[in-house]
Image (cartoon, rainbow, N blue to C red; front, side, top):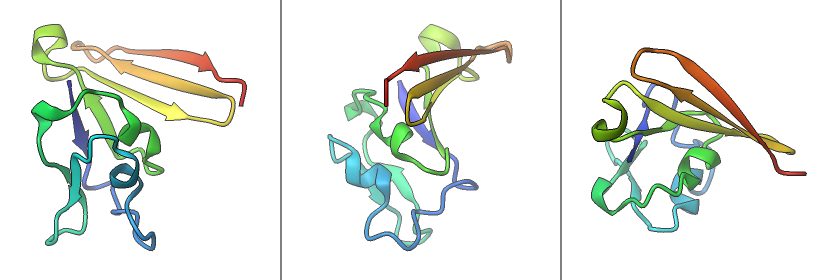
Length: 106
């Protein structure tokens, strides 16, 4: 899998000392592009798909792209973290959306 950053939604966490996705990536795989001020993934092949960056982004600008072998390039999986649950939104190759909720107990 790989993460995709929507540069239209991303603010680079302006006003923060460090973008949340960069701060929390356990593999230190994200960096700020000096021209745009927004993050990019340095090495997609080194990403182990922990989705910390996706969950940490307050602007919902990062999503996971499922590999083509599993679902084609149109499929995506995106979590949204709430205090007491995580909601996972799956978009399949035909544009259908499924939503799964995991109660975390907050």
